[in-house]
Image (cartoon, rainbow, N blue to C red; front, side, top):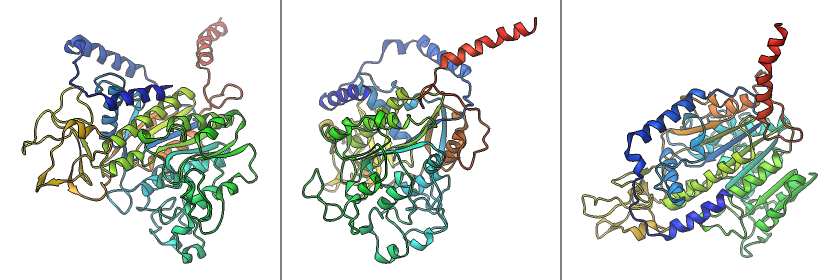
Length: 528
């Protein structure tokens, strides 16, 4: 699998002392670039919009994956695969339709992951820190919840008879997946122990409770075990850890109740035993809180994001009506940036792209709309004076004006701000390449902040051409609902594409080509 090859490349990347790479000889000649340009032009001229209805929809959300992160991850993945890096293409780079998304929240210029999730999942922009609520709701105000709920495309897809799933590398109760099923005035209400008694008495419910009660979700994979169990329940993996619930509920048991062909797992061995052909419901919670960073993941205990996506699609695609899947590298890109840890963030982005690549192998562009985007960016920059093939996490070839080295990845603010004897700290290549190194920041903060600029939308599949120009982030949900002909677009009049019997995924394109080829012959017979 691609993820196995990438892992080998990652280990090599982390262990090799990189030197300047050689510029490919063919790139020195105009014919190379002219031929490359002609090929791209002909591909663009041949491109025709896919105007079929989307049976399946997948939204890939790279939390905090701004355009600088995409570029740096592309080069990193290319270098992990033995190239200079700059010329490499990510799986998401191959998506033919692009747009930009305006990420602000209704009440804040710099957004958070809750307000943005409400926008791209529910189609309505919201206030900072709120989930599944319109901007009429106020953060921390429980009573403002009622009457201001907005439903996600995932929920609407389930109401239309599709199977639905959530895959995340953070706790599944976190902001981004939370907007798919919950309505809460505070993204931090993970469990009832995070709420005050008055709000609970008023009828507000914690996010974990809503996870198992609001929407009948077929696949739930990620972290967040502790929010599902009582304070008396010992964690199965870490004996010193316990659950955090006050109400003594075992929410995994609540979720399993009355479900057919349903399983709850908490480790990779159990996960690997799950037969997707005989499973209708799967909940896998592999850590008490967020999953580990990819470069620190215990491969014997926790599945990778790619493995979780693989299992989810194989379960969901059995529904003849299709599926909706939300996939997120929640926070692990985002959390890496917050800690000024570029290596964590970028290796997470590479694994996120591996998952996108695997999903493409399991689905067909004919009937599956795939969308890749971010909720927001970060104040992460990537530049400096660097030669072709310079390690992404390496040094500029020139010294700064203080006669000290600096890395080509930097942050505008964050915990990487450091002074030594009153001046900026120096750095060498060994330090810069360590996974725990914090890239330098211009402004000291305990946690680096989100960015406020637009983020990219990559799309392929049915009606993907509707992603164009610069759009409000809430537009994403409207396109995905319209393309699937679900509320509020049930009268979309988009032609359906009949699938292969018993399969909600790929449809045989050769049959379509054959029928199209027969049309002229049939017309000529009738004209005789």
